[in-house]
Image (cartoon, rainbow, N blue to C red; front, top):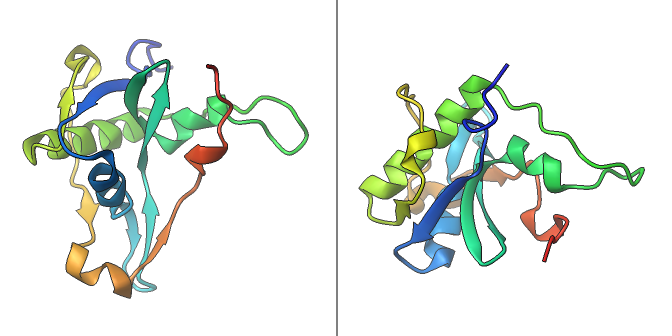
Length: 137
């Protein structure tokens, strides 16, 4: 069972234009090297005038299923390690500032990032459309 605080959305402050962060996140995730497909892991999520970095599974909690029922997030510790590793990389690249670093775990993992120059060679796949999430405002 994952600690609820650990499973919180990661509060961030963009240091650059958010478009740059969103575009960079679209190239970071789980690759299928053979078929040149990349499954995006994290997304920016804006709510209550705050910006968060979240694993796509965390965002399912804000979604509504086709049957009208609320979504669920089946988030694993591995998912959070991946999110944290992406956040650390974005911070190291001076794209974001992490505002609640106390929820970041100690473990990290390697993150695959399609170079910008090669992005046209890959199919970039999102598992969730953040523009369609339930807006709490």
